[in-house]
Length: 430
Image (cartoon, rainbow, N blue to C red):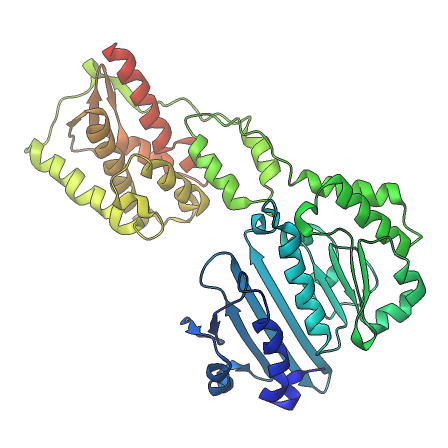
């Protein structure tokens, strides 16, 4: 049923359940469609702005929590000639909140109580409670498309089957499913848990419980095959050692974190544990570096550091705020952004000719300020050098190489050149 068919009074049944959440996880802010501004939640405010919550025939609103843990409650409903749609989702992160020692049972109870309370007010037809990441690694189409047919594809930590599904399975068969909790809800639905909490969803015990329950409900399936599939999924959550090349490790760690489990973090780490960038080639012996050929050496240096390097700060201060702070850690953050955002592939010729001087000057400024280098300006930027010890480093040439194609920001990173120069400078001074 769609509670909005009865107007705001019908919606109040849903709001009562949300408001009954424990203060530790209760949302306190609200937003309407198309609005970026979050308002303090109250029923009165929602009632007053109810007209803002419609997109065509669909009513929708979102509640969030303004302090940890992050909670988002998303509600949507519509009634058309095709039928009734009504969905309520609660997202919680970080997942570690549910794993905190001594708190797991209590916090899992919040979620079970939430479902139980909703079932007392609305007839539930389908529901799951589980790790969102593990859900996305699975193959159950009902998780991504609520209109999909509802045979039993998978079992989860928390499962809710409405009366039609219960009837299709057979109530007696369903109630005998191996489970931690089996509870009949109002309106003919059934709620059941495979484990006491979702905290260990990827453990051997939890996978065995999920597999046994699924095979009980679908006896045509093999326990060994079902369990093997779940175990394979659990491998995605297992820690994998990071053995990245130290010159680019900061860049690769950030990419691994960005990808996460759903983005193939494990395979990425396994691949790049074997990766080593080409040796830095953008240097000369200091004795072989050409002398300055500019009319005003200081003016050229001022252009590099005051104009070109600041252009890079202006270009990237939003995406890479570290460039504003003048800290050496800015280099791997900048390298990662250039690589992750495909700057080497998407630049036009004109854009590349603007970014190369900016990136080269920014790198050169770090060589000067961080390693005590000395600029040797040249009319041709790729020949301009920074002398450190017995070597002359070519930051503008490095920048051109770093922007030549999609993978170049990693293969020719600023971080690698800086670290190489730092090592050699130390060796030279000793």
